[in-house]
Image 1 (cartoon, rainbow, N blue to C red):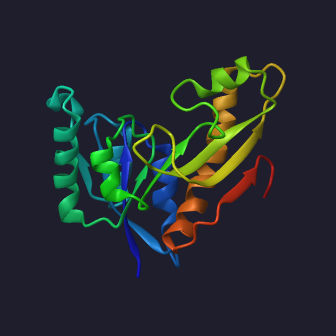
Image 2: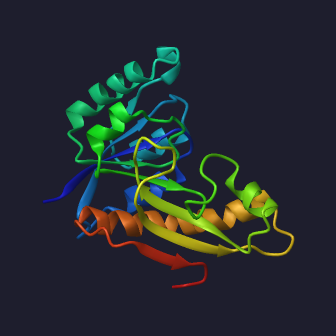
Length: 201
């Protein structure tokens, strides 16, 4: 049975685009809605041009009341009947009250090799630490920030002279490979982690 996927975004949606464009043919999932907390998110129009329904729940309307925001998100999702959620650059922390409802059915991509560098500024932190390898991780979402079982990782070599921006750009290329690969496997019921390396075909 084909899984119905909701994709959450806050910005341009580059990972969202990769996910949407991958869910064709014999893929075990199809996107049913793209939801954003920002009505100005560039990814919303990209979803619409692909024929995907969109929803907006502005977090500013809830004045720091996360449960009320999450209740509104749940209400917006209702008509679309998603089976699972993919967070793709969704910049709002979700509480346990929401994540528990979706336990085992919600994925996120994070720009570090977790458990290293949870949170923000991951590329700068990897450089400051003198890491020679960096990358990205797809994981199941729990109430803990950037936690949950790892479903895939892609490694990127740190090069001499790298800046946070140059490193981020190479990591993003691998994010675009990793997330669709993990989603295909996960939607088929396979939680075996996917491991990729930069330069690997």
